[in-house]
Length: 311
Image 1 (cartoon, rainbow, N blue to C red):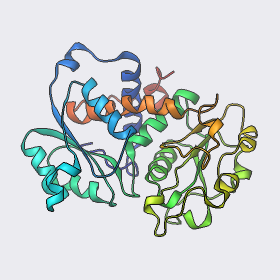
Image 2 (image 1 turned 90 degrees about the vertical axis):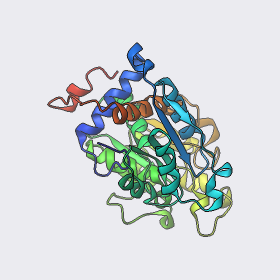
Image 3 (image 1 turned 135 degrees about the vertical axis):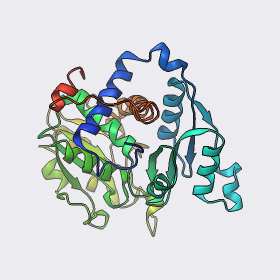
């Protein structure tokens, strides 16, 4: 693996190796050798971000990397410089990896094919968000230990969600049962996963993952509070009461409280939303460490061997 761009083509062993490394950083921290290593990386964020950008920065600094600062509003992007030329520039001055978020689909994939240094996808348009997926999967492993046969319900603006795509691809690879619940106009028939009624599926799901309404990607954006969305398509208190006792609530954030999820449920006992954010640092450390240190993974005969020490 030379880049980290998409979950769609990743093999089970590759995903589980990164889960194992995520767990190592979460539990064991860093060795003296690791923290002594100095490398330069840059984060090219062409879209706003809080969790992803900050967790990448924390991950990079924990690993001892120097972060080359980049801000779109103070860069030559405003003079018409292309994404490739910007990335090639930071590579030329010493960056050994590029983390990029961009509003257009396929931009990250194209860049990965053009550069000689690792490219990490931090979200490409409505395409994929593989590091978010990695931290989501790690959250589920910490909760259940095994994803085979789990029922994962992803709810919301599917057609515009890069999180839904990456998670659906990877979870199916790992043996989970993935289904979507969405307004009809927000369904994406290009994705080969079943659509279900939220009120039917809520009682049998092990994980209910809510998605933010991607208003910025809609052709005709409407206020997110319109049309009683929460009551029709969101996680209300009444729906939460019908969830399995062992089921958990997840959300990639940012959360629109009172829209896709009732405000009181964001930090309720079964919510793992802020735990996901915590794990995001370790997941991104695992990806950066794997790509830059070129460690050869030791795969077991099955994923239970690989994940034996994941609590």
